[in-house]
Length: 114
Length: 113
Image (cartoon, chains in turn purple, orange):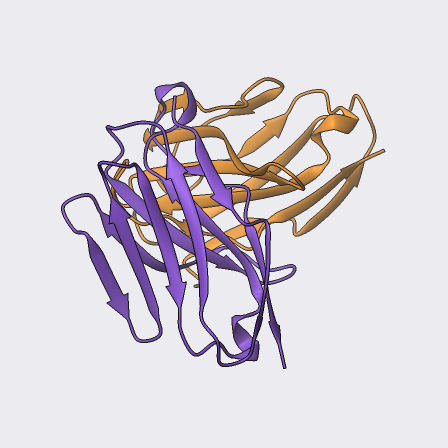
């Protein structure tokens, strides 16, 4: 089954700086890689996703890159703002045990320092 | 997104009791999923359903039962609750299997004493 590793577990950056969160996956058959943002006590919300036929995708201050050969993908947030503070989860479309569904990383707590 | 709702939002029960968590979606999505979220483990897939009357196990299915008699509903039952099942449970739905976005409900915080 799929295994997703996410780093770092905590990331503190100054407001206005960039933040990068990295994930690796194990199943070469995975072809869909979403990123979710979760604020305290709230639901995970999809912020950006990428499919395996694309190397990079941008949406305003957020970008995701994918390296299929190395089996890793990254989330880049530029010009960070206080509202970016949250836990971010990466996921890959392969699932543990071969099930349909997503396998998630353990999350990165992003702290934006004023 | 009001399209997927979970109930109850909070539940406290005792070990050995049966408890059912409800999930309802209005998007007519074919796929529905149940995840549990625990500190240090992230989100883990419990069960999923590809369509009405089709369900399958995920990564951590032991102690849980699901059914899907109607496309819009996907209840999760703990037949005999244990303390290790204390968690936050999220339901999600998607229009497809592995390569379509999943949209989550607000979650149910379940405490088992």
